[in-house]
Length: 345
Ligand code: DAH
Image (cartoon, rainbow, N blue to C red; front, side, top):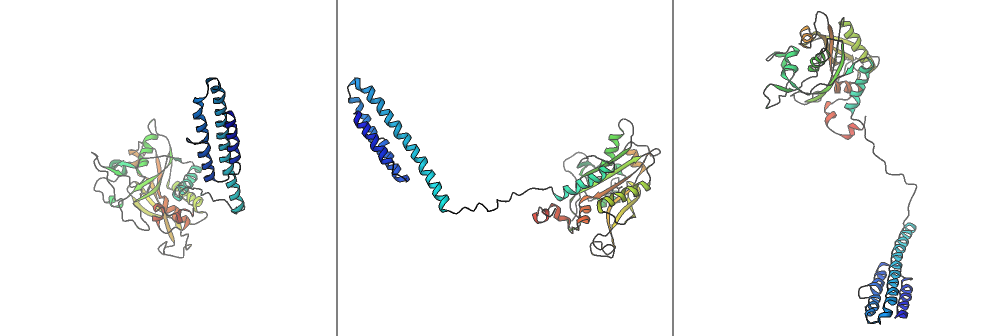
């Protein structure tokens, strides 16, 4: 029996040596290690041995089994390794090929533009405040001198929020933030205000190259003891210079219920430099913002006594600022998610 096991082991290991493919290896496994294989057959006879030999032979049988099994595992690895080296040798591998490019993300142009605006106003001493996107009719309109049914409401085609007890709207402009900022800063005694209030606004309008139903505005508010219209002009002119470089600006009479007087600011058209083109509608000028001296009643609504305090305010359409800077002709690009547009920034 001992001889048979030793013989079996030699025979099996000898037969394993020349095998180099999976099918033959499997045949070998079945023949020697399978349930009906040679080793099982030998082990079945253990029971017939006299008791005193059984332990010795049993141990040898186990050792044989372990030896064959580990030889089998080594062979499996060797076959895989050989297949790999063969494929490396026969299939050409060009290690000089460039790697796959890793696509890097970037900030949305609207975000880049807003950050540029924050940076400029920040450098000029304005803090960034946040205000609500959903406002009451009172804040969005009434406290800004626009009572119900006032004709000026036509300028702000409004989305109303359904199912609320009072009239609640998606803010049509960032101007209600003026009231909130003033109330916050006058809570413990009035103090000067110098803030910008950026945020998304909504209007129920026909979408076109110039109008979107949602867009960013950046509101600005400066309130102090002796703030004048000269401060308004100087500050806004400086903003335009930092945003667009040296470029003529002009102020143009306008009307908003929450400022008196009111003015729009134009910059010299960046496309035609003033000679007239479709972008500036042949006027040579592009409007970039609305502004004015804060109306006394609005100051009062914010907790400031207009006999002591005065201020100026402005509101700019952020996408419009970017369109004029980069010559973008259609505001719809901003929210269309077209990579051909976005990847240019
Ligand atoms: N809220 C105005 C709009 O949406 C823009 C504006 C005009 C804001 C004059 C102001 C301002 O603060 O003083 O059309």
